[in-house]
Length: 514
Image (cartoon, rainbow, N blue to C red; front, side):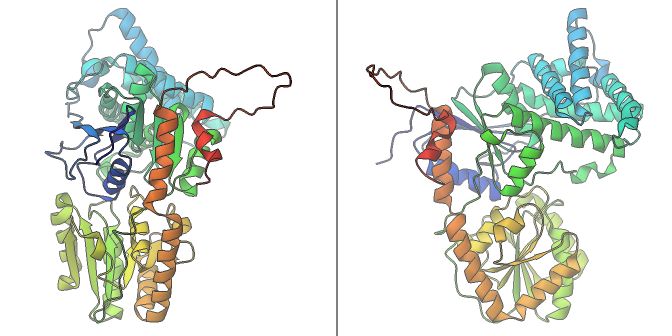
């Protein structure tokens, strides 16, 4: 008989993942929801892509609702629409000034200005399901505020701050339009819950912050992706000034999230250090490494015959696929008959992936395996796994490969080194030739790669299992979402016993070392 969900309701807030996309992050969220059956989940995904038509995963009984909200596209009407009352216009101008001054600042007091400006702007954005209209955000004079803050920053450059690229009026308008579009996430209404669990990303974090400022609801923040203010592929055409504004905007949103979250759950020491560097309080950090279910990745004997390399990823322009294909061109030349299996390719990127393969001239040496794919043979079809993640990919694919008992050649970015330890090989980023040399070495050394594969599986079983993740998040949910304990009444003692009060949000640490 299924247990009855508790009264604690959790809003699991993502940026286009579970339950609508079958990717590494979606699989992690699914494990969390299905493993914590005693909580009731309200699933919300906020994205700037096309809204998904239906969930990609079946929803368990403890999911109360699942909604996907896409931020609508609005022409650059931005600064042209006025008409607000004089008082409202003055408040909007002050909020925009705070936001932009904090955006271009480098010290924490200035960063706090960004958070205050964002909070005031949230007050102008009442919750609405219609995220496609510009609404009150159109009255924010972001262009003027950006230009003024930029001029001020340039004037202060003599104080030892690094120089800024040029920002023209046109650049400022473009940046203002893009920021205004991102801030539509502030108007997304959140369900009535006891806790919001935001799984990374600028867009969902903006919605989570707005919900916290409106209702005071606790926020649990999971750093699920590589902690860098990355540039997206579509932004390559933008000017250096606009790219600088967007990068600083994302970093400032992350800093504000660290300041507002009740607890932050980084995936690794790498993510932990990033959070500390950007203002997170050490007492609010609880490191929870990635984990997978060993039953889904039981491992298997190496296939005999054809030398085979496996890479897992979405296949998109920002997924690391280009580096893999470039390296495999050298592998195929050194090891005749070698084959590359690409697993986990999403439907949205299948055609683009096929075009990249065609340009390499590798032909049938590359095999596509779109999702869904059976985890049991996702990695075991080959002898070596190449772990080349995109800048936004979480480390779950690496843990899956390790759990499958395969030798891994990884690119040394983000938490790859600490996750893999000494159970695989690491090569520098951006060097396909070094990647190819390492792969060829393992393909030619069966004893070494089998030893590495066995060591990798043992390391994954010891440190990266899903039951550990579920256990820790269950404790965090209970501490943050559960109602406060009932008042205790004690008899007065002649000699009071010494007592130590344990903070509520970390009391579980005294019961069990995780």
